[in-house]
Length: 248
Image (cartoon, rainbow, N blue to C red; front, side, top):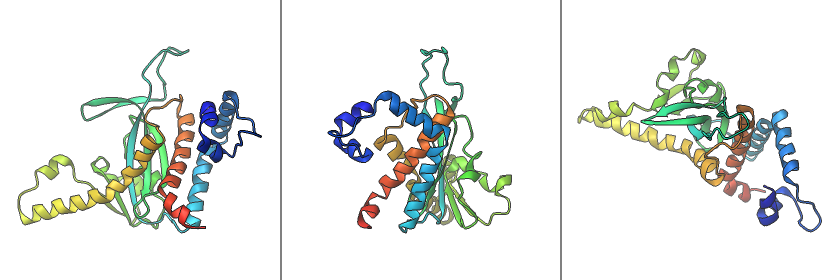
């Protein structure tokens, strides 16, 4: 970051630093600032502040929700002071591949495609476990999710909700649909669900590609939770950049 602030004019402009009159913060100053964010839970407050700002500009996140999760790898190397991998990261199997790291769980607004809630867990936590935390309230009418969320409506924390859950059919069951009018209709319904769920993948692409968060560089869930909340806020700003530039 210290090098980037020296070399990249757009970074300095974003940080409000004038190369002529201002001193570029060194590595220690930047590290101290990050620790300040983590200690006081400011990552979460930054995320909430950005959401409130977007809502005030007419980008309210109160439509249906798309829930999804993505894996973030953690370094498997033990070449560190403790001689161990990060104890708060765990491994999970997806398909035939094992992954060691953490998960980002996000609730994405169906209309705007913006993140309205985000939760971080170790990679071995099932997608269903934090699902209730991703729903933004009683006004939610419909929730879209992939096949990994089968059974979400039966969870005890969902009791009493009037929400309609539109969860994707398992791939094997969908492939086995009969070649009949009813089977073709069910397949069309699944295709329509998939088109809506695709919007939930866009924020993850921004987090991983635009902001390069494909592997953790910090140890522990507290540090990574703070980073993910800041990235979720920046992702919302990136996704809404055209609307923001068009409004005063």
